[in-house]
Length: 155
Image (tube, rainbow, N blue to C red; front, side, top):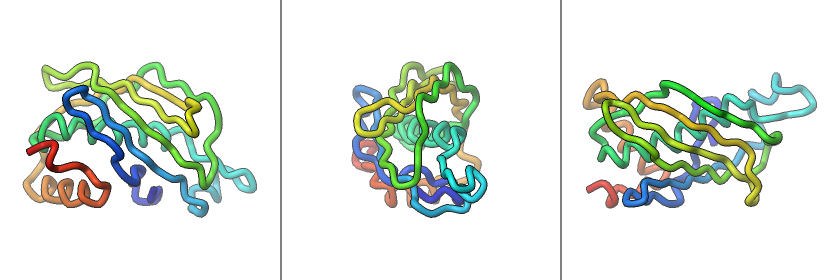
């Protein structure tokens, strides 16, 4: 997890396009400037970053389902629930399932667990649009390799 760069997924553990699911892993860094302000002496990963981790996991699922032809952008968040705090050094298991795709939108159900215990979950809506330019597609494919995206699943 590279919080300062909003790279909240360390690796893709499983991508199952037939069942429309994904599982990612991330480890909260032990040191980050985020924790200097959130909160001094009591570092907690902000809920907005947990939300972003679920959105990024969902986004990789959608990109896979779209075979890198379209890009998802966050459009709405519903029924988000945060059950407990996340602290530096904890290992996150982030999953998402694609529950709707069509008419330029996709909806996922996503959750984060630590050690089998649910930390948070949300229903997330995305707007699906063309990539803004070919260079961005190239960047995303290169980054996909860094997080172990199974490119053979989309060819």
